[in-house]
Length: 424
Ligand code: GDP
Image (cartoon, helix red, strand yellow):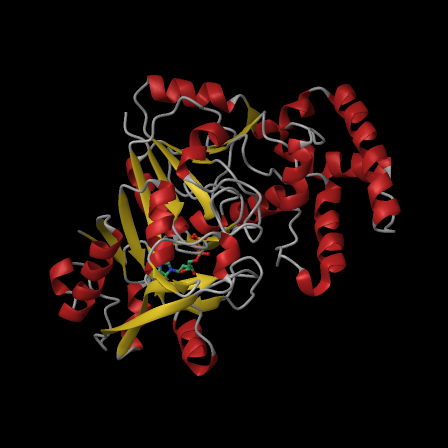
């Protein structure tokens, strides 16, 4: 048995989806273990061009079993819409290749509205939420105020449970936010329109994983977002509301005893960050615009322009540490081909001192980057498939990063397509 987690090392959008799509060739099961439809994992392969939000990126491979674990924010409406979209492009989704944990909590119709209302209330102090209801969902989950997917098999109990929750939530919606009440009819319609559609896929995925493991099958855990968005280890409060780190994969998958042998950390060859929060190596003005355009850095889910910056070695080394990454995939190296000199953030100046340890979140706002410049290669590398064919300066850039962060860079990607990869 050899299991692997594919995780983001930075702020997300590192290209995890393409790495899962590539590696699924060697794995039997792919599990999403946290997060919800607020992600956008881009996968480009022989079946087309997809931005997956909640579906595991293994759904394109025949014979791979895909699981949405108990740790995800299971939004029946978004999931069903996404499933229909993927199926309309010729990808088969059946209860054999897609399984939803009966212990996954459901993102309820009011969670998205709560997200929107709270961001509106915060106005210019907002967190930059994708407004998919993820934060209200996880807070309610930990308050034990949502329902489990498996309750769909107990319709009478489910209705009673939801009626109780609705009574409570309407007090908040109307009393705190002055918003409209949600009616029982709306909830019943939501059950019929969306929950009933996903019900055939709901099962005891813990048993599926246990049996897969006993039969020597290999499991791939797919994370959403990155280390710096982890609820406990990230740039709180500008984190997501779940744990993005590999250590959470066994818990969020339904197989708490799972052993993870490989942790593949995905790192972008420069930095990007969507939404609010401190971003020490951020670039501005024309320089930033040029990089954003070259990397097509616009959110897969929201279309928002991503903030871009120099490769941040301080944040990356920390991200690798909290993920306990055993190897790295360095993505989007081709994007830097236009740069004569490539900026790299080697240290921060924090509280007047030069540091290489990622600081406590509250100290980030006052931190400034120490930037060094590396020589660029100024030629198209998108067709390169072998390490020895990369220009010397590109090799040096990769080796430099590898040396500073102390983790082997096993993959270097030079284009979004499945085959645009150099395996070292
Ligand atoms: P994820 O959420 O970590 O899966 O990442 P996203 O899908 O949000 O963002 C990665 C983006 O970069 C997608 O548009 C990918 O198609 C694209 N991409 C991934 N790897 C490469 C690469 O090596 N080169 C280029 N040019 N684009 C890439």
